Length: 404
Image (cartoon, rainbow, N blue to C red; front, side, top):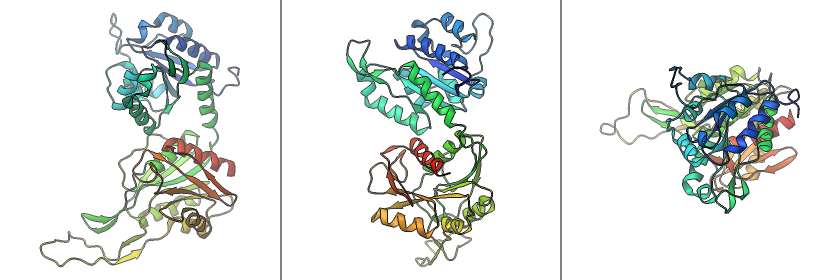
């Protein structure tokens, strides 16, 4: 691809280089990024400079290489915050076990990790290390954490390693890393001009000021969908129940609610102006018929009997109001007769697509960083393997795009 054709043309890329023998590949990666038309700022760890010199990297990038927090002879401060805001993406190649561990746990003791922690754009991590380090449980866990944060891990190759052993640990080839970045930026333009509604998390239905009926939803799947929609250029409205996760993209307008009725009201207020709506929230099916405005005291009352009433079905309500051209997707979390129950909901709620989770699948459902889904629509069902939720979000949106 020429620089004029490449989706990387004009993009700001922070290239992080760590102290490993694979740093020699970073020179080729830098040349390819520049050739594709990207503006590249290299940030290298102190150990990285033992493998490749800043002079070489500066000559290729046409920018001073950043390594320390300030320049020793002038005292000039290098702002990791400014770099994080400047970047359209950050790629760390090679990423050593040490740096991966620091990134996963926020150990901000060098310029590269602080830049990563300040980055507002997508981050790609290309590990490189010996096979035993790569296979160690700590490395596996740290990479899983990075994926759960929304980073993309570019898996290393299997082959001959610097140790003389053969196994998984070779940094992916620079040409393939560039291809991953190009695919990302090409995909990032696909939903420009689209307005998307996503719901996420549980709803809490109050019993009294300190107690509620709720569920175990963490909101991670809904937030992953919102971030992926935003990464593809969509304007996103995220209506979220009470969760601890946060949204990072400036293209996401976050609306916080507590109850099912509050969520319905916010969805109805914006749905008519949306091109796509994905109902990912785990809305409570029932709410107390009566809510006490004071804490119910155990010592001064009989055991309360809580009468429940049905909550509104948000997906069905929007399905009834759906206009031609709108795309409405729902989620179904089932424990038995999964496919039959999901297909029934697809029809009854007038959905264009439903995403099925089964509580019987290990690693799927509430509170996990992974998910395993089956997409069901009028054309049949499409099953996907267990994957990190951001990757599941990408699969789901890929499928939605084929239907738009």
